[in-house]
Image 1 (cartoon, protein in one colour):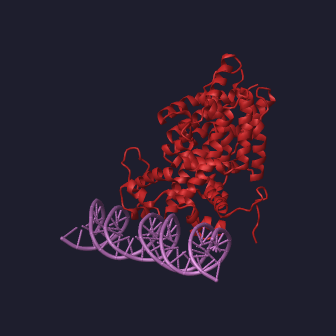
Image 2: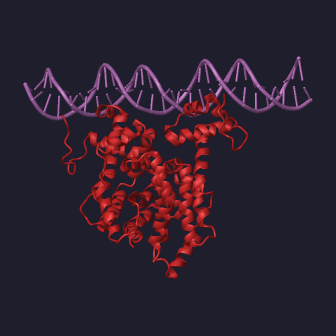
Amino acid sequence: MDNNLAESTQTEPGTEQKIMMAARKVFFQKGMDGARMQDIANEAGMNKALLHYYFRTKEQLFETIFQESAGRFIPRVKQILASDDSFYVKIDRFCTEYITMAMANPFIPMFVLSEANKQSDSFLQKLFGGAAPDLSVFKKQLEDEIKAGQVRPISFEQLLMHMLGICIFPFLSRPILNTLLHIDNEQFMQLMQERKQAATDFILHAIRK
Amino acid sequence: MDNNLAESTQTEPGTEQKIMMAARKVFFQKGMDGARMQDIANEAGMNKALLHYYFRTKEQLFETIFQESAGRFIPRVKQILASDDSFYVKIDRFCTEYITMAMANPFIPMFVLSEANKQSDSFLQKLFGGAAPDLSVFKKQLEDEIKAGQVRPISFEQLLMHMLGICIFPFLSRPILNTLLHIDNEQFMQLMQERKQAATDFILHAIRK
DNA sequence: ACCTTTGTTAACTAAATGGTTAAACCAAAT
DNA sequence: ATTTGGTTTAACCATTTAGTTAACAAAGGT
């Protein structure tokens, strides 16, 4: 009677897990305002009151999903850029890993950015856990490469925005790209697969002297 | 009868104009689902029933704003890329004009993409007015430059996504960039001003041999 | 067996919300 | 002055929705 998706963890999902899985699906699709507690209950195959039993309010359930989602993507910027890889490896890793991650979770980027736009700024800061990611390592590497004459002068902030935009934007605009480029979702994913390399190449060519 | 919008520069806004101005503001901020007709009425300083008098339903009011907003941004891709400018001028114009446009309407990109993600694909196609933008001119220019050895081989689709991502992404992620880069909205706009040049430079350097 | 704790449900409540209606308002035409 | 037409409003209605409650079921310990 139960269709089991959790071969990976052996234990089949408990009620709380089921709720979060359903909430993810519905919130990703409809956002906080568009989602209905009843939708989530239906998706999870249980009574609506159970959602309130496990997570007191819609607000709280949403926040759980949002934190989890944003937490998967945003701190990763730091995680990669603060590593001790060399400058060029770092750019490669950033593009490859970010696009890989987005391909595995294609709805998270739009969900997080869309909701982040509505949230108060103070809330956003909480997301970074008090300490905003430290980008100084990557910044210093860039400046060193520029000083060494390996990289043409470019603002650190602009480069970061270039990299993020190149990697994430397609996932934010998929429906429009589908129409614009006359492609379906499968072809889109194929493009994203190629993009791991294409993005890295593009960025490295752009900055190298 | 119909009130005249032809001379909207001089005449003070009529009721319909006031409603649309208010609707823009509220929809941009809260999206279709988050917006309340009462919010819009308050913002416009009038009775809620008037909204229904001019636009029968919330759906219809929303669609008016959405079409107008998307119509300002999406067809512009074609408008610029299909012009008879040279390849390099075209890239320059694209970055400069798109960022200029986004700076003047900083909420439209997130609004359009966020809602486009919820809409059905069929609806999106209606947006392009039956005929999706013809990107073949730009595509041919790229291929010619590659054949002439001026530009290194690169997929047209990837380049288009690079350009769009670089120009639009910052406006989709402003709240997060504010935190990430420790900047306020004024500094953000300063960055965008510089970005017109930075984006063009970056892209041209990336593709040139 | 008996009681306590935890999990689950159907039925309900209160508030919010999109939309309607009938009356009031007001400018222009008669 | 009165009529007439579109415009605007307050009050109202029907539905939806987040959240509650009380009863019920299932374990779990004694």
